[in-house]
Length: 186
Image 1: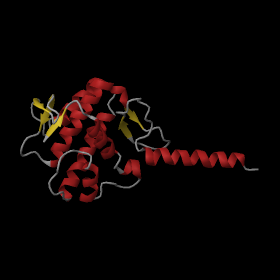
Image 2: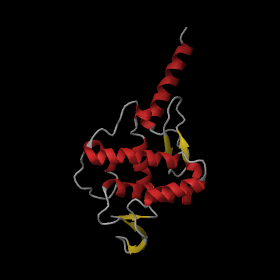
Image 3: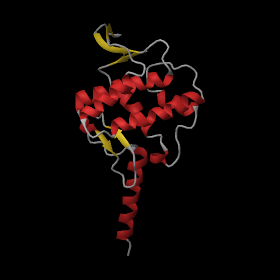
Image 4: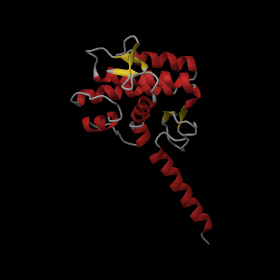
């Protein structure tokens, strides 16, 4: 697999989605089997081989490493940990032409790399790209009360507040709506 260095958004999306599968965020394990793993990896432009329970277990372990990068206190620590992720299956960067014919930097993965190693390399390169382009301040804790989720904000505006907007953001919006209704009731 060749991981484009300049295009880190897909890798950040997978990193956020992976960290968001934990029971500490959702209340139950959301990476329950190979079908869940396939859905998680659907955003990546790579055809991963047949997924099985061992892949799921290894990616669950990887989830903790990814979360640790997002929880770092300093930019230097984030870069160090993300580089370790990228090194799981990544090799030296190469310069190749992209489909449009322009030169693009890529990080190739080893031919015999494990699935978890390839995912780690994709996420590691993406997290390094995020730190370089947008800074360490884009690693955040979820703003929803009681949520222990973390995420990397790769949005242009940098205003993301929730680890899982459709879950945490919606939960908070519903709670605020109910509070307003109670306050308005006679």
